[in-house]
Length: 411
Image 1 (cartoon, rainbow, N blue to C red):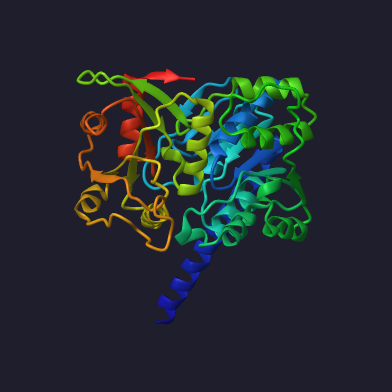
Image 2 (image 1 turned 45 degrees about the vertical axis):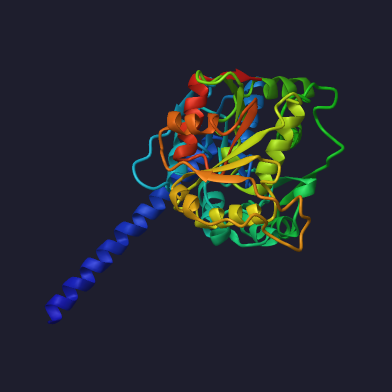
């Protein structure tokens, strides 16, 4: 027994030595890569992270820097120093260990800057991405919205506190003035950093033409960060103009179904995910394209692994979100169940009667986008706007790809 116990103790000690050696080697490798890429910018928040990463990368390239960037949003993409893009292949579930490889790729490519969308939801993982992997000099926080409620909290203050885990020690955190929650200031003070609220009335893009963009707040955040790096306004404006939109960005196509004479306008708002951001995206779309048909059909794609988001959308339905739509069509994982559900004609007798009228609700369990489109085309008698909402994965991605192939893109 003493021999066996001694052998186990010796083996355990050997494993511990190997683990400590690996840990030390890994720390040194990460530190070497960080030294090789002196400007490290991370972007967190609820919505708009991919867009801000793309804007910053384009601005930095325009300024003459060699920059590698990575987005995670709708599709994980590596943006190389020459602006070329490479989709990241994943085998298994996403892991923040992927971020170590991004930092290594930046160092190998000779980049002097890296801009990365943080991929974590839980606060402990955000802290690890920031403090253990990147140690960014700059953190951008896009906004705080009610999403990922089971992991981040059910109030905006709770979600802001979760996002504040990414605030870097000794670094500078930029946040839009209207999104500047106390948690960000508290975290910056505790970690010896600086918080920079970006005012609404000030912009490094003063005098530049940006009125055609759907979400000027993303431009404003990226421009403020670029200006802090000494980049001139004309260079910032040129970089923003050159930025390539993300796969999940707000997009619009015009399609004409062969069996009908009316026109369908197809809007991808899938990547907005939750109701608040979706409402803002739809309002932006109608401001930019005032001639769009008033008749609108909502296509709501639900996913079985996003139960909290499904509940948000059902609450939004009860609160009158879909009142401006003539029809609501469920697609995706829960479509069949939603189609069988009995819906009341009014949802809240205490609320305004007009606002609580339900659209006509139906479901298309099919996953084939052509079949979904055939059903949608039969729902309207004239020109109509089809708005994709909910989730970009699954049926949402299939519809976006179908619209991009068969529709005429509208700027």
